[in-house]
Image (cartoon, rainbow over all chains, first blue to last red):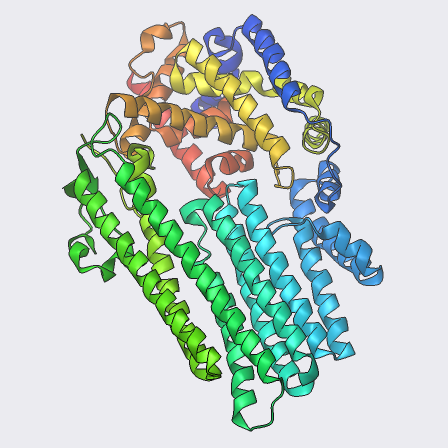
Length: 420
Length: 186
């Protein structure tokens, strides 16, 4: 053995014994005991008397106790999933879906839940009823939206990723439902009124659920794209039906039903635009109430802007693509963000006006033109919504005076560093 | 192996049954290790005690509130919490004095206690090694502390530090070499 190797071994041995030989590294025994008692008292107060509900994960966690880590993940886990999927496939739907209904993206049982849905999908497609298939996919999409909300509520470290995973699946379900509904138009037109009614209600529910999730999840959970996909799908279906109804002169649904469908789309768009405007107005109020200078908020702020939405505003072109920090008075930032928000509110008002025009067109039985107006208004409101979301991130930072608690290493944050 | 199964069983009881007694036993197993880890980085007995208490309380809250999240190893989990709290501690300290970029905070954490050798009075070779170790960069300090002093496996160290096992092995090799060099210069 070389001298270096001997020295390495000696050093390793000394390091190993450091914790035993050096008392100063170890805690005081009386503190250890006192702290234990204090900890036990604290955690006993947090223990709920309610028994936790059974979940598939618990089985996996129990297996994991006795199976070595690598073997558990490479052999036992896939086998467990296989067995569970088999059990789901061969047992009744009610029991299996009930057992997995609380599973969320990122959990082992989530694969089982999706597999259960896949089997359900297969069974329904064999049965051949398109209306039933469409309703099933809409139900899956609603589940995904609830999963997004729940994942955000659980506040896991990787919540944004898991929410994104659920949203990708949600969009897929909506797309499949869209195709199935179009097939209903062709194959089972007598059911289309009922199916579209269900679709419009589902779209409304999903929209509300995602909005709540976004409010709870903050800037990291971006639901705008998914909300847009759901709305677009709904608009597309109603437009297809209206076109078909007006096109060949042979109505697949009554004029009254067609009018109701379009009117519902207008009402939903009106509601969304109103909500967006309220959020923008709230943000302006919060921004206006924020102190320009205080102990928490310095008079000058060093900012870098990475938000693409701000490109649309010519008055703040100076920020865009700036890679080096710029020093600006906080009052300027407030004014700029306030201006952008007010533009969003104005955009919302425009959308509402367009929707009012659509209502008049519906009264005159010009449904296709009305749908065109609804689509334009929805798109404009969506753009304004994105602006509001982006500005809210900055408003939160400016108004709460927590600029300096932003992670200093976060280069994508609108305001990255504060210097007095 | 028996210890590992026992530890996993305790973790299972905490997560599924929310059993405070089981958590008490996990506390017994880890309190000294976590205290040493924190104290080594902070070098103040009172602050190390406060942070260690916070680590265990935070870990309990996370375990019972997120029972669906997979935790492969309690050791990796609790050390990660401790590591994050130490970084938060220095970040807060830095924020109070003046605004510092994260890089500067990391340097402060690495150098913490390096100028406070008087607290660790020289008392033989071990103290000398600890003093030299504190002067090394943070990455080396953590790897040596966790692997050689606390005797965690390279895999566990990798999970705590968020690196690959190979990267940890390379770091350990370099750290040991550097430690030897510095000790030889003494």
